[in-house]
Structure formats: structure tokens, C-alpha cells
Length: 479
Image 1 (cartoon, rainbow, N blue to C red):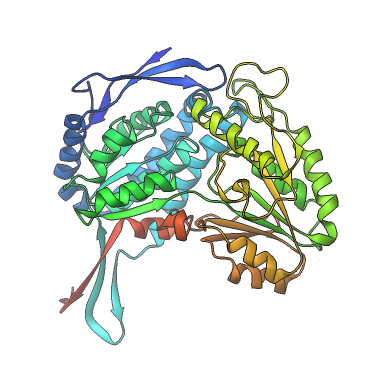
Image 2: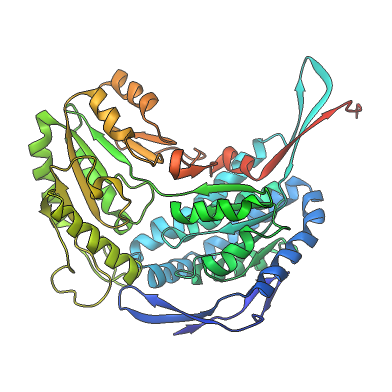
């Protein structure tokens, strides 16, 4: 078992002010794999004070130098990618091959995209030809609290740290206590890269403790949070008294709209996308809306694909899916699967309980419900497990109505060979992102949602802008 108790504050590894142990559980075995310390208010205050003290110097550092440090971080990241993958696989259950490619790979991908975006970004620019003596200056928001989730740890850490660092913000990172080890490796990387003391700080803790202390702290200028809508609401309320900027990337209940003219791989692609990361993705296509002429065959195909998805230990190599993160999530998913059965959805694959041959570990059977309607619990709640809900529709208008009938608005998906229809759907769907025919968004594309899926955008230029304030200057002197 790993014991890592220190926090990274003001450029040094320091012992917590008071030791409150927290066991990190390996979801593949249900056994403890690490012990960490949860931070106290004194630890939070120390980290915020360090970030506040470092802010003037870091803001004044030329952006070229800030970019150069992130470039150095990318080089170091490449040498530590296996350490990151091993940590994430053990602590949150990503199968090791997937942890190496998707989980660890996401981090270096985002950092490189920020570097590319920053080099083309004008941090100072003229207002316009009509106002030769006006300037627009983009400057750091200030001290940023970064609160990251357990399901895509490095994806979210780098989306926040990379943008904040280039923007000139100093920061305090609170990773999820469920998956803290990868973040501690990342702190070692930040230290090795040579970021000035206080620019980056890490304090472990839970949401009720360190998370609440950061979101309400008077010296924190911005909170960037990724997690549940419930927690995002609490953070917004706690941050309101200090009127700090709050960026939220929250839950989703994406619709994958499959029209009768969809390509022959559309259903299989949708099922496998839903099962990726054991369904623990906020942008998962968890509602498959299928046009009625192909609905019956789509249900058969979805059940066949789901029944072939294998489940196994995260430590084993292969293309299987791993466990869900912990017992709380496992129990919630079981209850929701049972709720789907009780409310009358037709179970065509999977169901309650562990997969055959797996008696220990938080493993869930890949599950598909058919003949659902959009008022059923399995169509409305974010399950955050390998559970797909299928709903038939007749017309394009009906598909839009069903897809938009959700409190969430993160990602929707469209499968059709009709270009005009695809474009109409893209405009009509109320979500921050829309993906067509298996085509994922390109490098630098913004990630984020609307409605109860949050606000703000991560990645590329939009990710940088979220950590920047806009300053308008009149009477700019010629230089």
C-alpha cells in the first residue's frame, strides 16, 4: 500500500497541519491501495496564501516564458506517462491499456493544444481601426481553485492547470480524494519543470472540507470545478458571497440520435462509446434515440454488442472495461438498473449484480434498456455506469423534442447520411457540443455545456479565456 501524506505548497512538499487519514480503495479488488491525508483549513489557507503571494510575479512573467515552462512540463509528462497510467488504473479502475492511451494520453494532448493556442493568442490587442488609442488587455483572473474529479483525472487536471498557468493565474489544486495519486505525480512534474514557488499548490481533501474552504475563500478569485451538478450548485452558492468567478463542467445525459439512414456501424459505435470508461463520462451518449423503421434491428444489434463487452480487472491488459470507482457508485447503479426494470423498460442486455465469475470488485454488467420513454428514471438521471437507454422516435421534430427534454446540455450525437438534416440537428440541439457520425471534435475545440451541465469552456483558446479578465484601456500611448 502507498502512503503519501504530504501536500505541495509554495514549492515544497510539506506535512499536513493535522493528520486525517483517508484510504484510497482499488475498485478492482475492494482493498485499500493508498493512504492519504485530508487537508485542514490551515492547509487550505497556507496554499491560498502561497498562491496569492506568487501572483504578482507570475502575472508579470512574460507569456513567452510561461509557455516555455508548460513546454518543459510536456517533456517531463512524456517521461512520467506510465506512472500516471498505473496510478489511475489502480485508484479509479481504468483498464491499464486504456489508462495508458486515453487517460494518460489526454493530458499531454491538452497541454500541447494550449501551447498552440497561446502562441497565436493576442494578450494585448487594439480595440479596432476606429479607436487607435484604445487597447484590450487580457490578464489573469488571479488565484484559481481547481477542483477535479476522479473519472478522467489527468484530462481535467491538465485542462485547468495548463490554461491557468499560461494565463498567468496562480492555483491551488484539490484532486478528488478517490483518485489523488495521479495528481501527486503531476505535482512532482510541476516541481521538476521549475514553476516558481507558489504558482502551483496541491492540497488533498474532500468536497465538504478543502473544496468548501476553497470555493468560499475570500482570497480565491476563481473556482474551476468539474463534477456533479449537485456539487456544482453547492459551490456556486458558497462562492456567491465573495462574487468570485465560477466555471462549472457538470453532468450530462446525452442523446445519440440514430436516423433510419445512419451508417451500418452507428449502433455498435454508440454502444461501445457508452461503455467506454465503464460509462463514467459526463459526455457519454447514454440515451440512444432510434428512428422507428430501424428500431427493432437497432435493439438487437445493441444487445449483441453489449453482451460481447467483457469486464475485468483494471490491472489486466486488454480491451475490456473495468470496475466503477467505488461501492457508493456501484450501489447507485444497481438501484437505477432495478428502477428501469420496475418502471417497465425492457432489459435486453445485462441487469443487476456483478458479471459472471466476478464476486469481488465494483463490477457492473454492461446493460441495455429498450422500449423506454423519456420520463423514465433511466432516461432522466445520469447513471454514470455502463447502462444504455434506447427510445424510439418517428420524426426529426420528435427526436429534437426528446433530446432537448432534459435538464442537462453537454453533448449530443447525430447519426445520419443527410447533410442538411445533420446541420439542422446541430442547430436545434440544446447542448454545448454536438458530434456527427462518429466524428469527434478536433484539437482545440471547446469542451463544456449549457443548462445544468454547467458554464464556461475548457480547451484551446476558450479554455485560456476562461482564466483571463478583459481590461479595456483608453488613451494608450504610442510605443
